[in-house]
Length: 131
Image 1 (tube, rainbow, N blue to C red):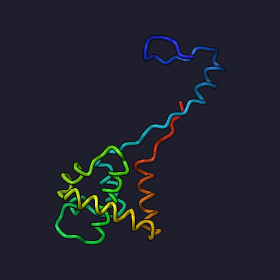
Image 2 (image 1 turned 90 degrees about the horizontal axis):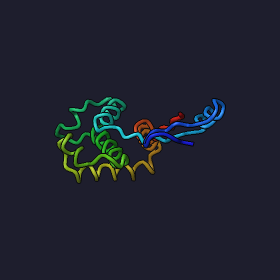
Image 3 (image 1 turned 120 degrees about the vertical axis):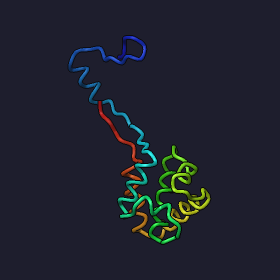
């Protein structure tokens, strides 16, 4: 039971009861990384520098990195392609197309699918915390 001032959460009872209640309480904490963290993690994974993402040209590797970052931004549900486009100096529709293209390709390419899931789990997977 919780008693006390508003917003204060104390469990009342003997020590054994309190330990049991606290050991059972689990909370999922939503992990929402910042744009910089996503870019840094994906660039590190692919061995690409962030400056390369803004450079002119459409090399396959750099295009894939931009696409994965755009996909992760969309998957986060909190970040926007608008903010990503400003940071990378790229058009929003281009980033959206890249994310969509990678989503389709990942259904046929097991290696790409595994890469995308690994990065998603590392960056966006909810964390379970025990009290």
